[in-house]
Length: 150
Image (cartoon, rainbow, N blue to C red; front, side, top):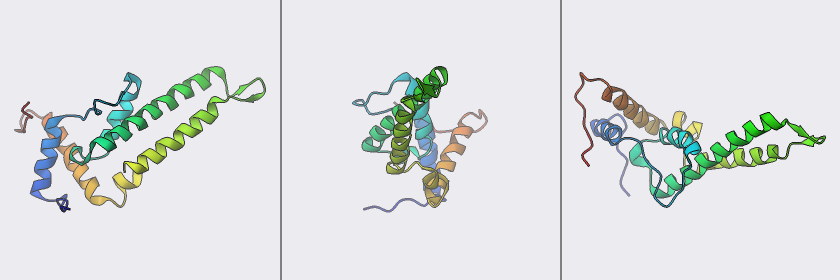
């Protein structure tokens, strides 16, 4: 098992620049990601440095994004239908609760929950910050940057 590069090293800065130049990750080809789940996918992808994702985690992230999109859709439907139907709680509330729990479990499983991104995992947080800085610098025409060659 190889050791991870220190997040405050020159090697980590180069990796962050390379990650930024390669652009956002896409889900694995065997995983469906509907258009309404794409914003959630993008948000999840920004919570870990690009080079620390593997196909299994990407597949789980796609499930998480689909669940988040379903929660939003159900919340909109509840807002239209109302919280109470025929004197009983709208059954969609139970679906929202179940999906929300799955999202939390997935976030823990793929290590993109709040503690992982801003808490104890400081090296990951620092690596992510370097990547975000590299993304911002990429938009600055005065700073030379690396470009992905395809």
